[in-house]
Structures are given as C-alpha cells and as structure tokens.
Length: 167
Ligand SMILES: CC(C)(COP(=O)(O)OP(=O)(O)OC[C@H]1O[C@@H](n2cnc3c(N)ncnc32)[C@H](O)[C@@H]1OP(=O)(O)O)[C@@H](O)C(=O)NCCC(=O)NCCS
Image (cartoon, rainbow, N blue to C red):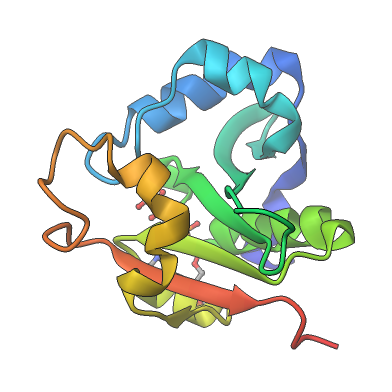
C-alpha cells in the first residue's frame, strides 16, 4: 500500500468548514487568513483530505478577475495546507491534483499560485513566472496585504501551470 492510500480525498461539505478554518489558521506565516464565513460561502471550492475520518489537509481555488471578455481566464490555487503529522506522504499532491481535475471543465488558460513552497509546485508541473505577469490579476488581493509593502518585496514565488498544453 502506498503511503498516500491512507487518505480519502473529496469535495468539502459544510460540516468540514470548522476544520478547514483551523487548518488555515494554523499556518499564518504561509497562508492568507480566511474568515469562517468566507470558507462557508466558498465551500464548493474546497477539497479536503481525510485520515481516519478527520480533515487533515485542504486546498481551494478562486477564479481571478478578468477585464472584459475573458481572453486569459486564470484560476488561483490557494489555502493549501496539510497538518504537520501527515506531511511528506503525498497528501498535498493528491489535493492539488483533485483541485486541477475539478476545475478542468471550466477550460481556464492557466492555474497560478503565489507560494513559499516553489519546489512542491515545481513537482506538480508549475513553473516560475515574473510577478509582473500576474499583477493585473493578483493586485486585487496583494493590495490589501498587511505584511509587505509591495508584492515585489514579498518573498512568495509566482508560478503558473498552462492548462491548455496538457492535451
Ligand atoms: C507545502 C505542504 C502543503 C506540502 O504538503 P505535503 O503533503 O507534505 O506534500 P506532498 O507529500 O504531497 O509532497 C509532494 C512532493 O513535494 C515534495 N515537497 C513537499 N513539501 C515540500 C517543500 N516544502 N519543499 C520541497 N519539496 C516539498 C515532497 O517531497 C514530494 O516529492 P516527491 O513526489 O518527489 O516524493 C505542507 O508542507 C504545508 O501544509 N505547509 C504549510 C502551508 C503551506 O506552506 N502551504 C502552501 C502555500 S501555497
């Protein structure tokens, strides 16, 4: 049995919201905090991983703003967290792969992420892009940042995965 076989991966339900809230809250250095009400209102955009019935990992996505007719519709992968004891067993990979599968019918141009774990995302096929490339999309979020004075002093790495190259 592979280590990752120990996890059940699936779409979140309202009953999972409190556990998702706690997982995100546990990682203030890496994740943008999210209010419980935000999680509840976007619960259909969350995937969870369970071990022994308990939620031990999560990921979500957000459709990024587009000006005018969507020529380059992009989806941001966000709020990825795995509880410490369950790390390095393939859970985050399963979560992100399920999220990618879930958004595939939307036919986005690409998935993007701002991350402190670029090596993890590189293993899933993401590659680094200049932040300027995403600024028109991510400005809406970064402009409200209370930790860095500018996206260019923020150490997070911008990465993207082209969806339409996958065939
Ligand atoms: C980053 C995080 C989600 C990874 O979760 P995980 O379940 O341990 O990751 P996986 O086991 O699925 O790892 C998949 C691959 O990436 C590698 N990897 C995982 N975390 C890594 C890291 N921080 N740096 C480099 N490689 C990493 C694994 O070794 C594995 O490689 P392999 O396929 O060659 O064996 C987890 O460490 C976490 O929750 N961190 C705190 C929150 C955070 O940083 N979220 C990401 C914000 S975008």
